[in-house]
Image (tube, rainbow, N blue to C red; front, side, top):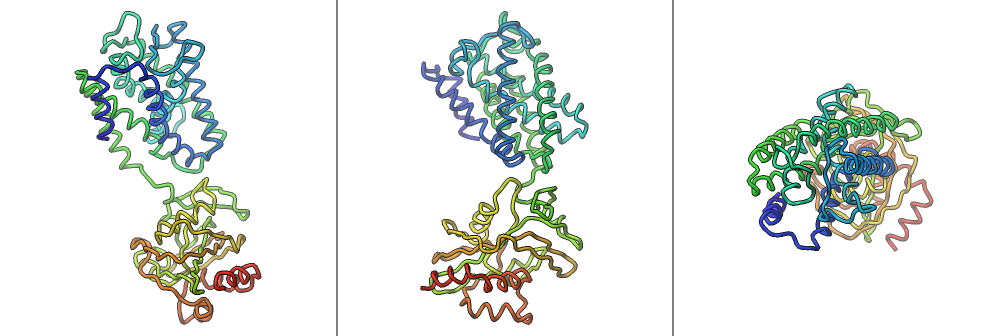
Length: 417
């Protein structure tokens, strides 16, 4: 935040150098990246790319139309400060500059309305409010100018009315796209990360540029977005991915709410870590966990995020739970699945099993792990088979299958040789 404010101060008070169009292009890309990354987790790489390309070309089209005809914003023209112009008309940066505003506005509207028509209309209004903060600063810095100026710090009323038009169409494009793609996650507030950063930056521009009302609106938008974020924010890895018998995602739910007496089948994984002494790393699950609190189990386990490979999920969780990174993991039981119950709570998972090797010392995360220990594999095999020792049911079943796999026996022999 401080970096954005400092940057805004210098942009207002220092004359922009001739090469500033390169810096403007870089800033546009950097501002867009957080929203693009959130879209990737919401929709997956392919659909996220399609949506951003669709919105980007729409933005270039509607801006170019306005330059030639004055519709819908009024007559205006871009300077050279926003980067090279496509066919000498519209800066290429428009492709990425407009879309984060629209995606963020739509995400906020989705928190208010369940009806698609109301969402699209609300998104257009929210996008127009964003522009009340952005456009005055952009005009002051000379990024673009309107013929005859305008009543709001050089911006005409026609521009804001035009945002209602272009924003409605943009939101309709998002609605149409998602109607066919049917995302499984609730609308993540992270989609508006880019626009939040942009509002902070342009609000600072308004403050340093003496544009009082644009600054007031900017501070209001920031306050509303912070409240909205706190109310609706969730982490992508806090949601369980429900799957069918083939492992295909069919729904999602918050992790704690998903685990109950009739937990649905969902996607997970387990990891066994070995060292060169032939020991396997065991962990005692944190005492506050909803499922199997305080129970000793294998090295690590967890759930897969939507649009995440199980390999990436295993590496992510290994680092989060035990502070171990750079460990090569090999999948041993790709089709392992189980159902188990304890204290009225059921686990029901498709749970591929990985094996890895390291001599690094773990750094357990106390939010996840109560204790750890290294135990000779042969001793662990004996211990885990005795119900008196109370190991997690998935660890019991996984060990039983691992010791019957020739591939695992060969790998273990290489580890301890």
